[in-house]
Amino acid sequence: MSRNNTKKPKPGSVHIDDDISNGDFDFLDQTLRPSKWDEYIGQENIKQNLKILLSAAKERNHPPEHLLFYGPPGLGKTTLAHLIAKETASQMRNTSGPAIEKVGDLASILTNLSPGDILFIDEIHRLNKTIEEVLYPAMESGSLDIILGKGPSARTIQLELPPFTLIGATTKLAMLSSPLRSRFSGGVFRLEFYNEEEIVKIIKRSAKILGVSLDDTAASSIAKRSRFTPRTANYLLKRARDYAQVQKKDIDERMASEAFELLGIDYIGLNASDIKLLQTIASKFKGGPVGLNTLAASLAEEENTIEEFHEPYLLQLGFLERTPRGRTLTERAYKHLGLDFPEDKQKKLL
Image 1 (cartoon, one colour):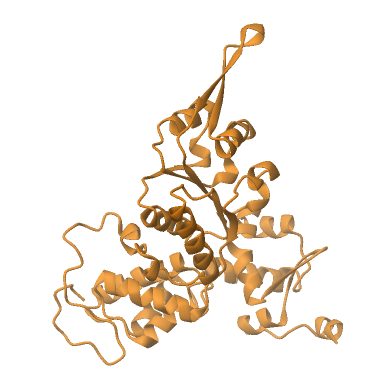
Image 2 (tube, one colour; image 1 turned 30 degrees about the vertical axis):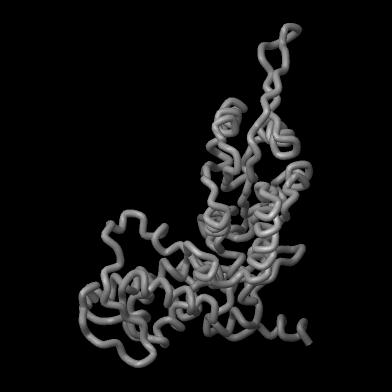
């Protein structure tokens, strides 16, 4: 498992012997992030649109227009922003919605930008409305309006800003005000979940960077548990690597399965909390419907945790349905739990 291991890989496996880098691994997630367009797997439609937008802006010798990326966590919104900065040879300034508490904070960031810089705001939906209103003219006309003083003596000064590109990222598009959304003139792009083939490619690339052996069956095993998300896939790969390293073995399907069993993750990526949620609806509420309120109280969980962490994947798998009366388990969920689908629900389906 060491990086200097000279053991030959099995056919169909990934293994490298070269040193990964001279640096340390304090920022491993950053190391795994693609640094070139060719390394960024998936989201083909978005990549094609961005390449056209960036090429056109480069020909006009003008910064790209403002962009907004949205979608579930871990799909690559921040990575796209970094790639755009590299493609345009621009300096990227990072911040987040919660970090900008006052108008002065935003003014300080904007006035310190250089021409052509990219300002990346993560969790942009968490900007307060006052900050948004200051951002409108900055995005639209490249000016910053600042009010000095209070009451009758208050006056407004206008500062000209250098040309810049704002890239926003959010998991909750609906929480952005309509005026702010409309000012992303370069486009608003939704990142989609990845398919298993794309996740396998991402896992193999990450395995090369980590310098570990990984056969095809292990890569597929990790991909099936990844919840269609690269960030989760990389997390699982690292945990499988740790387990295999302690066992002094390469990562094969058996090693990966043992590692995930210790983590309480089943063969399709459900964890103990997911299973508990499904079992609670099945046993306590006869498969539902059950309201979110009641379900959260039964699980001793926050409603937001259920809605944002558990439900999206369960809905994707077709294990859960949202109805006007509450959450309901599907026949597929009962089958996964090894339970019989209730007869009364079968009749309703017929």
